[in-house]
Image (tube, rainbow, N blue to C red; front, side):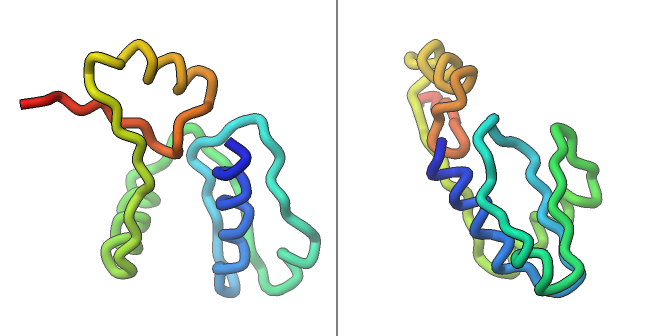
Length: 102
């Protein structure tokens, strides 16, 4: 999980002036941010368990225009119980997806 929080913390350096970093999921781990990260411009960092449709649309548009892809940990359906346990322990590798074999 520390790897994820370090990756999220590093995103502040990629913000332009008057930008916003929205954390839609996370753990109880601390982010590594300093006052200097916010003195570069009028930036905001906020968190939300629910993300509005407009924010999702903007995120998808950004992803498509910059070729950003999610980091996904794929597990077969037979390991659904393990995937659930990892999700509840916040120990998945970013996003966990169950794959149904054809």
